[in-house]
Amino acid sequence: MSLLSYNFRGLGNQRAVGRLKKLLNNEAHDIVFLMETKRSAEEMQVVKSRLGFSESYFVDSEGRAGGLALLWNDNIGVTVLSASLHHIDCIIKGLFCEEEWRLTCFYGWASAPDKHLSWELLRSIRNASLLPWLVVGDMNQILFEAEKEGGQPRSQREMDEFREAMDECGLIDLGYFGKPFTWWNKQTEQFAVFERLDRGVASLEWIQLLPHIGVIHRPSDKSDHIPIELTTMPRSGTPRNRCKPFRFEDMWLSSPDCEEVVKGAWTSTVGDANDVLGKICNPP
Image 1 (cartoon, rainbow, N blue to C red):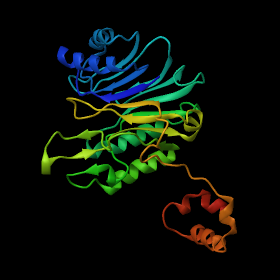
Image 2 (cartoon, rainbow, N blue to C red; image 1 turned 90 degrees about the vertical axis):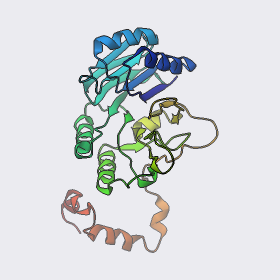
Image 3 (spheres, rainbow, N blue to C red; image 1 turned 90 degrees about the horizontal axis):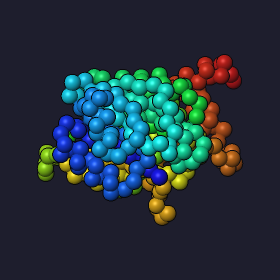
């Protein structure tokens, strides 16, 4: 079983549809999320039939820009909760396990002045369901400078805003198997820029429910993005860049420096320490 997410950059001609069909025919995918379809929902009905899916949910493009498509077959249960030009939020049943879980297919704003809208959207929908939560798609942003090669450095503020939104929503980067970048500007040599814009992130509850599911970076032929696939992880190896949730270790209490470290952090005014419920109502 697998879930494929792909910013295909347009299904405006039969040749593009044929390339996508060939890609999907190479391996069976139970759910496919497509971004930048550049087609209306009515036009995508024809594409859906040609790709061989029985069920779908579409978000119209604006002219020949944007457009989202979620495709699946009737052996999977999908209940759509909400949708916009930048997301499709739904409940999944029958993919990877019998328990229900939540899937948000996400397409972040591309322009720098609008990137904060991506994280506002993520925060606004986080409480729509208490089910284990997976978010997958093109975030149009990197978490760390190491996720970019070539070109000008990314804004530190923009990366910080992405990480803060992830923390507030309780989402953890799932890491990946394969090549490190999911997008390039299709230039060569000194003009080439590579970034990891597409990813899967999930709540701790989702990771605990489906610990054997990982993200694989699949090769691509013509698009500037590559598809990412969520499927059973290889038996050997661990995902690259997979973040680990913070856990308190009892052994830390045995360190002679433990008390001073905690006191120093508690009294510090650096970062968000002052926001922890008024230092828990102002003790000690």
